[in-house]
Image 1 (cartoon, rainbow, N blue to C red):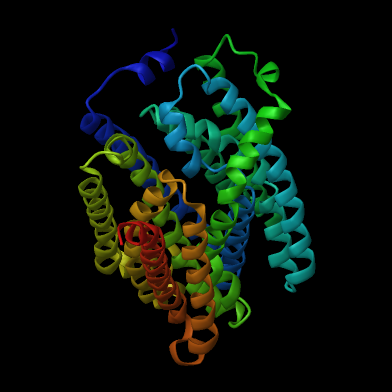
Image 2: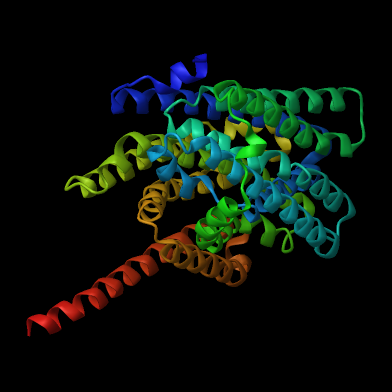
Length: 432
């Protein structure tokens, strides 16, 4: 038994496990937020709003590439991993290979998009370098999903923070020595290398007797692909929705104005990632075990309210500390960005609440409903961007995202009601 096996196999009360997980994950996100502020603040002070805009755009393209790799995502695997025991090593190995292939294909597709669609040469170069990190990040999320299913997130946090620290050190050194801009962009690739290496060492230590190459079977990979591909449209649409404001508004705004908007919205995106991490921790210990019980509705409401509470804390922090924080980190040139940060944090409250909806639908194996929600949200958001930009300026970004998400909920509710009526019709006909 290794230290990882001991830690991951200890039986803890669900509430204690959820609190321990949340502590690690919140600590991870606190470090990520502080390091992200330091990194982007240094880039912004060195390159100005236009340069900061290029890097935030590149980060959005990177995350979009990661989204295109989600052939068998953790949000769909987590409930299954929670129930698996002996079959887990084989599942991890086959899903890893499947996601590695998908991440390479996604990288090539996004690189082609960058060549064809991005006109600014510097922005294009930064985006293309950063996207090279996709195969070093996406496949290894399956390992993080394993630790999450065991209510033991310390290994993931250690690996992720080590990679982020490596990125920060490279950025600081590059700025100090006046290195070319491509070196700054390459820091994201080095971060992926460090994170991937540590995760490999951790999982091998926990499963020291597993021969990973022998566990890979084409037939089993096909089964996981058939399972995961049903969620693929919804995951693609969801990942694109979270970043569509920057991808669209970059074409409407000059580089400086876009940088003033994109920098705080990138911070909002980092904060919004807490929704998945905290929500997964709470759902593993509180929501998933009760879905089939009479207590399922109450567990869902409690989860949603808890997520809203965390989101509101972020909104309060953005409102109270946003102006000071942006000025201290990014400099006086970003004084006009505080409003964008507050508006983005207000939208993030809806994202936190939506995480409970997302996990409930996923656990019930209803990918079509997820695709409907995100497809509606994306279409409405893009419509708002195009119709409202002249009146609202860059504030149309968080406004369009918020309106789109609410419309997605409405579409989901209407679809659920229609589905219930369709299922009830045969019963009513039989009774009559």
